[in-house]
Image (tube, rainbow over all chains, first blue to last red; front, side, top):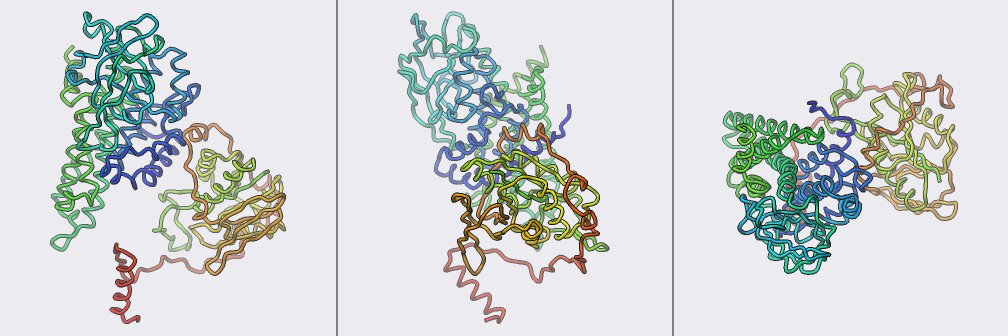
Length: 379
Length: 259
């Protein structure tokens, strides 16, 4: 596999880096402090086509590849992890399953508005009693003849407060366990659907994470996504793709913390010399830089396999596991290098450390990633 | 409306290295960008395209690598791109550069020519005005706003001393300030198409010029010496309110016995 950038990718990187630096970075501290969804940034991303990078042109997207989308998540997360996950959840968890499983009518109806960023997407699988054990779905979908009736609650849904379209898992046949789960496309305005309480979180505080509440929610028959009873598979496949996005987010956070640490250790003088001149600093930064680069190769490799239509479940799990743990380690050490200043909100590494933690938890905890990797290894 | 925008690829750095023997800039290893004032010029052209409808052509003179800024211009919304590239253009000073650009433009149809005020690698601000002279066109430099009114353009020209509102008849040359036209980003769709489009390569034979006036031969400017500005003392940065800043500056000036 070739990790060099094509000319098109070079041009894309030039744009996305300058966008992240000039439009996303200046808002990052405020978005965190005020737990504010950066709608103005989402609108700007929409205008430039960033909300629909890997969606084919015939469905209103930019016709780019997974690799480009992943680079966008990485570069944006480098300066603001909240904005990074908004893009990742929208693209990987909402547009991707429609693109990969939708009927032509569903694709025509939903993708152009999502890819243009007019609509924001979200994904609902997790429930109060169905986290890692996602098969324990309590949300039910009853066949009421010409429509479905959904009842239940989803929690921790990224983008929920501002999303227009949700991919939702529900039990269509409780007796069949995971084979009784189906996926639905739910619009914000469907009767009986509402957004519940918003979570107060440690990090990625602007991402508008909320409950979804279904009270006799009426979903049209044609909004079943994919095959009935195959929703669990669809959700797992969707999360495989999502994990590359979160791995890229983690990689971006790690790189952002490294950027800050390199700058700070060169400026900060103690004992008459910059702290970057101390070998302890140098050795630790060398190790961290190596891990970040290793994470980058894992992320690129998983994205490349997805682009090449090769199996990538294990690759995505390894990329997410390693990138998330690298992000946590890098940001924790970044705070340490910044000393007392690093513990204050005057420097961005404090936020980055809080943001990094979630990458070890959502879209499958690090333990789940290990289960997936071992499962492939030992089968 | 047909608008031609002249753009230049420049090294993106404040730490420009200079060849000690030749006294010219060393460009290798330095990232290259579209000159900021020129990008402002392209932004003005694209706004006019949106407002009045126009075909926007970007033209640059440079080595084959200058292709990059033309692709960027495509991704921002330019319709056509021309690269003037030929060994005969090499070593051109501002006079020979403006002469070559004018020679190319003379073979084209246009209603308006826009250039950046100046390039960050030379800061001469001469190429735009010289080009207007070669073409015998009216010109307005230091432009911060331009709109169409009938067949005429109403243009705002800003200098340190004054702001003038001028009426100018087309075709004409405007040289613009980047600060007045914050440039748009390339769009993802534009980027996806940029390398699938054709950049027209024009050599000296293709344009309307006397070849003796091109490149080094046509360049009367002799570089006597180039040197980076030596830093007398490292700068210091402070943050604070306007009042605090004034107090601080006055204190510093007194410390140095300037006031």
